[in-house]
Amino acid sequence: MAIYKRVADHGTNLSPLVSQVATAYFSDSLFIIKIFSFMSDSTIKPHKGKLLVLVPGMGAVATTFFAGVESARQGLTKPLGSLTQMQTIRLGARSENRNPLIKEFLDLAPLSDLSFAGWDVYKDNAYEAAKRCGVLTPQDLDPLADFMSGIEAMPAAFDPSYVKRLNGDNVKSYKDKKELTDAVREDIRGKMATSGAERAVMVWCGSTEIFQQPKACHQSPEAFEKGLKENDPAISPSQIYAYAAIMEGVPYANGAPNLTADIPALIELAEQKQVPICGKDFKTGQTLIKTILAPGFKTRMLGVKGWFSTNILGNRDGEVLDDPENFKTKEVSKAGVLDTILQPELYPDLYGDLYHKIRINYYPPRGDEKEGWDNIDIFGWMGYPMQIKVDFLCRDSILAAPIVLDLALFLDLAQRCGRYGVQEWLSFYFKSPQVDEGHIPEHDVFIQHFRLKNTLRVLGGEKPLTHLSEKLDFDE
Ligand SMILES: NC(=O)c1ccc[n+]([C@@H]2O[C@H](COP(=O)([O-])OP(=O)(O)OC[C@H]3O[C@@H](n4cnc5c(N)ncnc54)[C@H](O)[C@@H]3O)[C@@H](O)[C@H]2O)c1
Image (cartoon, rainbow, N blue to C red):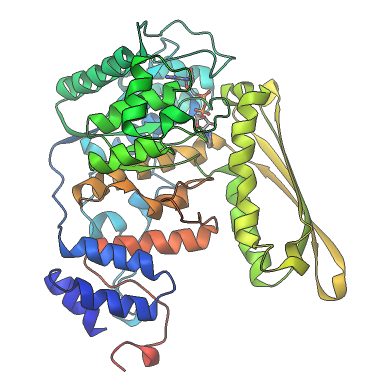
């Protein structure tokens, strides 16, 4: 206990000692060491001035996010689902009764400081786009009409070969991809100037692109820049935005399963430019439920023989995913979840024969009100089979919008703390968490949440929770 107090009090020159203690007491010791090393040489810069949230893709998720923030600012609705706005954080022992809201414990940008800008291949402003997407009722949307109409879609950096089912004409023309990144960088600077923002973050809310494997141009910043000049077809539109953001010192989060910044070139560039990045694919809907249920089965040593997930959705995202090449990107993102939670290599008797199948079906009548069915074949004592059926009538964008908000605020915090490169502690928000090379992504939502909050505790100068009893505490 004493060691943490000293770190919190002084925050300097304790790194080697703290690292030793952390190594002795934590299984996730590398992570703790990283945080303590970071604490030893940096403090949180206070938030000051406006924070501009930039979103490539002004569809269902982005417009629901804009509307929800403005609705909360006007006191019309609460920002439900957002950890940064609603969740408390326990500090110290339960008996100390210290449970501030996260936003009171850490210096997060307040909602009143946020301004917004975005790009889309369709020219609709955010109000028109939100009406078309049909997530929110006119009763909720109309009082926000003036605010939403003011967010106009800037012309997109777009290439139809990456998203075949879109045909909007609000698109930038360009000679080569270098010129295209320059244009996006110019947009970022322009929006910062007109909004008077001091800082910016970017959250990709654009469509899922076709499945991509890293190519030669993705291997280093130099190769990437050469690829931009040579118009390399392997550089996707989402990579144009991510590159532009990093070059402008703007943190970047990837809400889609696209490869985007999960390549050596952009990871290295983010390190060089000291910009935090994270991804991929907002964890909502069926995968959220999967990562809530699967850890429970494993905790009880219940076997899983099969997990069949199918859903119907009728929004534009569903239409894009109806194309097999775009669906492949989503399928890969969703499929990894069970293996890393259930660890069949450690538990072959329980999970060695697991059959996992995922289907997404475009069904226009349903709009954004998706329905996801899961059939789970589990087995227990003496091998007896049981079945669980889940029917989740969910609203994807309602689940995704608070994630956009939290990512924007946490990435801004990370940057003010001097953290950069891949932010693994934000894995909680993603279906396919981006991790540093050699690390294994964590999918268990409870472990992700534990890690997120411990990171916040340490960033705020408090000791991380271990849930060890006082009797086992470090002073002994
Ligand atoms: N809704 C969810 O819960 C959820 C969950 C996880 C991931 N996602 C991902 O988030 C993204 C957004 O989802 P959505 O439901 O808002 O989809 P959407 O189709 O309603 O919106 C995406 C928008 O991006 C635009 N777009 C496509 N390429 C672009 C480009 N290069 N530049 C600018 N705009 C571009 C499209 O025109 C469209 O308006 C999708 O990739 C989706 O797979 C959504």
